Length: 128
Image (tube, rainbow, N blue to C red; front, side, top):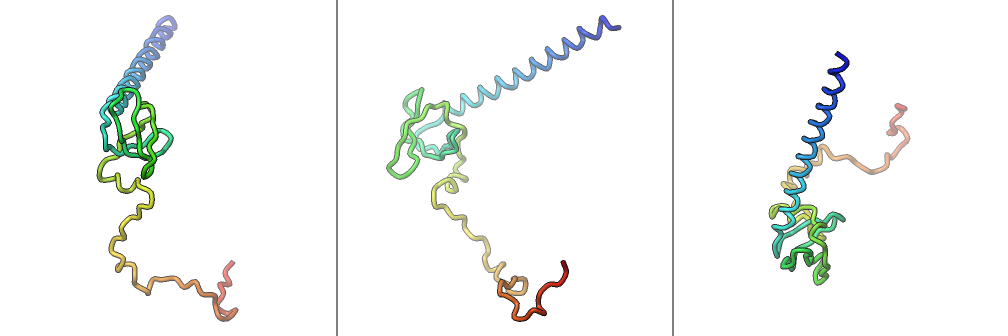
């Protein structure tokens, strides 16, 4: 029984390592495909957290990214962390403010909290 336990544990360990390496290779291949598919005009996020728009993607080693109006920097393609989908791209620009949805729904004064100081000491909360 003991002679069978050790080879069984080794086989389980080898199987686990094989599956984890396969998953890691698949993830790396997907990342490589995403980085190679970037084209001019694409909004991206770099590994440093910086957002920018690809200005020149002709080289296979680097991309030129506009990080602010008129400020173009050159980055290694491996620094591209993700491509920002078109519907989310507006939120990555500096100074973007989200549109206020149905502001009138919040204009009800019945639920508002007054920030004024109480006029007398009797109005203080005595529960401590």
